Length: 393
Image 1 (cartoon, rainbow, N blue to C red):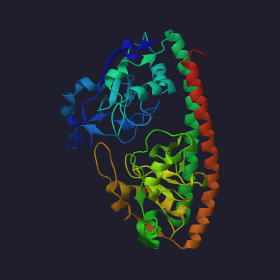
Image 2 (cartoon, helix red, strand yellow; image 1 turned 120 degrees about the vertical axis):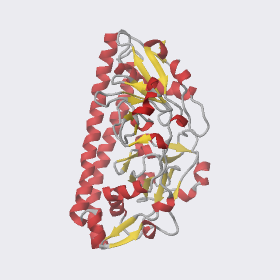
Image 3 (cartoon, rainbow, N blue to C red; image 1 turned 135 degrees about the horizontal axis):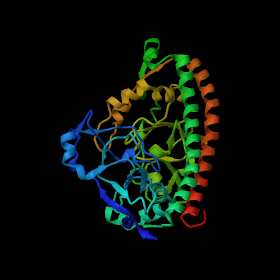
Image 4 (cartoon, one colour; image 1 turned 60 degrees about the vertical axis):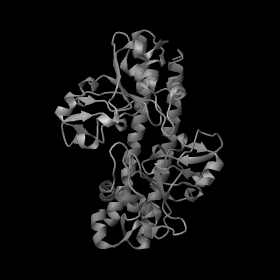
């Protein structure tokens, strides 16, 4: 084992948030690498942001190039690492993003990436994290993370095995995404695009469709550490393609959940992410009745329409764009509950909604099976990671 700093030629963090303010961002220029672009093992080429060439010159020491390993040290998981892919263009780091320029004769980028995303490195990261409301790992502590370092050819062999397993997970997720487009296709076939549906049907504000005894609300502010056997709570990261990935749901104490009993879930309740990745949606399955949510999510108890219909209407490009218009913030974006209540929903006859809901449930059954399969693959991948970095692969 060697300290991470011993295998890199250059290791630095990004400028503090005060160095990059909202008015520094431009519609084009030099690409800015942000926390949301760093996935666990993959670069997320969405939510692009840019700064001017002139402003970049003052921050050139934070430049990243394709092949560099970039690490997010804030959020969940506490450490996320990926390589900067070819074709992304020049990127620079922002606060809580770290750049690792590796010595290719000593360390393989894919091997190091897989290790930093492994349960072993995550445990080390959590033990050294600091902060009250949002835990983060400092550059100093990241430098000291011990890394197993077999010969370079062995690193490449291990990375290839883990790449193959990870590719299988990726393909399953891509298949899930394609299956998920089917519900939107059914929606458009039955009701037309929401912009068309607005002309055909009565339009009501979202709040008018919600149970008045269970108003739109967000959930737990500080759920605390994971409590085995405790009350499950849904995070934004658990909301995947209209469903909930139950394999990674965390739990809190019943006492904390009861402090936020207003947001305890019933079957069919819709969940809407309102901070970070605004606009993600999911329906509460029977298995999560009695669960709770976090402050980043709003609970929608739909009663005056079919929940399946409302969910797909809100996932449409037109409604997503409406929410984007009301989303504010630079570092962490969010939408106010007051604006959520105003979301316009075209409401066709209930009989048509019921037919739509029955078709969606068939698709949902297939999605559930695929999510279960992805969960099993995630467990297998974690096992391979553990064996790989224990010298058993």
